[in-house]
Image (cartoon, rainbow, N blue to C red; front, side, top):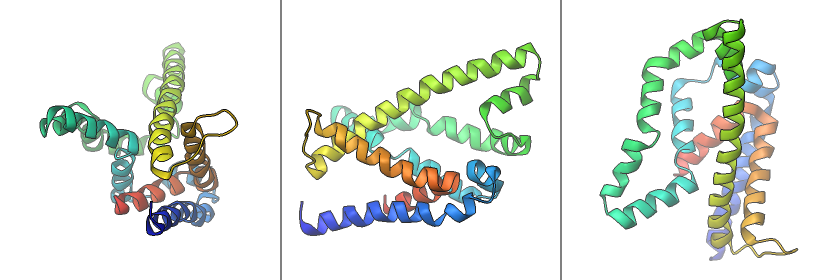
Length: 199
């Protein structure tokens, strides 16, 4: 990579962290602000965040592989079979309902939807277990995908007996944790908007 390329990457990474840290004051207003953005984040910012979240490096790599293997038709696999239709359905039919419910977590949503009796408790347990499994799977998927790409792209060396992909993934996880822990949903959403503009 040239000096200009390295400079762009450094500015991008610093920009992500700075945007997250700037949002720290807003997120510190209370638990509702930290986890839900005070329920005041405009729809277009949430939409931009969703778009940027689904244009990550792992998705880009698999889409490129589909296009390479199938030609232009490979692009439509992601549109038809990916999350696009699910997201459109959720935005059209469930967005307002979810916001009006005034719940913070999926476990609260399950009690809101199924009640606080045994049926609601079973729904909460199923939701909690499935979210833990999916979270571990998604973090692993994104860490491996971004680790492979970033290690190759930035020529990160392996040391202490660990692969370059490990160090690249660790770097990205630490950077994401800095702005997420500092500024909650505000940091996540606004850094996604920042990424979306660059994309």
